[in-house]
Image (cartoon, rainbow, N blue to C red; front, side, top):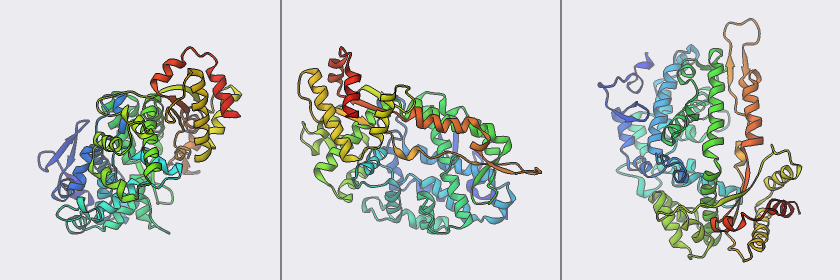
Amino acid sequence: MNLKALPELSFETGRTPSVRIPELRNVPLTDRVAAVVDHPAFQRLRRVRMLGPSHLVYPGATHTRFEHSLGVFGHVRRFLLSVLDVPAFADATSEEDLLTVLAAGLLHDLGHYPFAHSLEALHLKGQDTPRHEEVGGRILRGEVDELRGDQPIAEILRGRWGVNPDRVIRLCTGDLGDGPSQMDSILHSLISGTIDADKMDYLRRDSHHIGVPYGRTFDKERLLDHLTLSHDERALAIGAKAKVSAEMFVFARYTMFSEVYWHHTVRSAGAMVENALAAFHSRTSPDDQDLLSPLLRFDDEAFLGWLRDQMPLQSATGLLVSGLCDGRRSLYKRIATYSRAYVEREKQEAYNTIYAMDRATLSDLTARLTARIGTLVGRPLHPASVIIDIPPRDKDRLETIEVIYPGVSGQAHYQLHELSRVVAGIQDDFISVVKKIRIYVAPEIADDLRPEEDLQRRLLREILS
């Protein structure tokens, strides 16, 4: 059977209906794909921005999870066309396998909602908040009544696609269970790995909309042309000819985090959202459904407005949200930055001290810094006037992929970081340089602090005391 003849893989522009997305991409809309895309649960993604509050810094960052989901589907298609040239994969796979991973690519962000990454970060603060992967599974199965449509997406997958919805969910979440099959391990690596369809899409798409070159500096076509399987045939790998392209891909992701995703002003907006949500959560203790319902109902601005209306104007939530909605852009200002790369011993100690803090200790430090800064400006400050922003702790793992050297007399496979000082150095640099801890204050306070030459010494003393 010629698996490349699958309609979603073999489509030609003009013969099969398609949808156009940036940059100059045609995504096939076969009947079964259109049935999912036109479902109310998928159409909801038109109202969810890809990068949350980043548009307050980069005006073009208004693209959506809807566009990205179509893009990932298109990239999974390209990945499959490449890896089907590998006999070990082509011989082991089936039409159902291919349709399952295509559906997973299309639906991997089905459960995303406004400011999902900010809300999910509250897990680190001991608060139970909905994970978008789990929400996606519930929506797909039809367990969210307002998004069931005429029938759940699960029924479309069973009836029109001929695939198991639970298997699609497992590929999306990565929860493959104990002893996953060889094929599920391979298919999941197409969705989530060092080089995968999701990252390949968002790096290029975010760069396009934001107006920066960083996420488009890798050789996409060479990577796609040299996809293969790992030596144990359980994950995606690359051929040796794509080694430099893989290095460029890893570096592109590094620069996007350094210059875009974790830009200090972007982090300010994100930290304001996260702390507003944390204050709301602490004050109201909503159960999962109480919070999930408005998250799935509103777009970004409407959700912020809803959040503001739930709290008194002078509450922490009210203060923080007021700078982000109703046409306002009043972002907190950075007054201190710490990283592992600074040569000053006290700054390194400050970073390590804060990074290791639990929720209660961090809250105590924030209160002490707020009091200290209040004495410097000569007035008591609102408890939400100071924010300590700590980067996510889930970005510390080494990003690597297996490189295959076919037909050689010696070792035929290596991890990319074993072959590349560039990749190994990027990981070290990411942890030491890009992962910064920053202290922000409300903008009117930052203006009052500018003449204070002794500010940094006083902050360090408070942190290390």
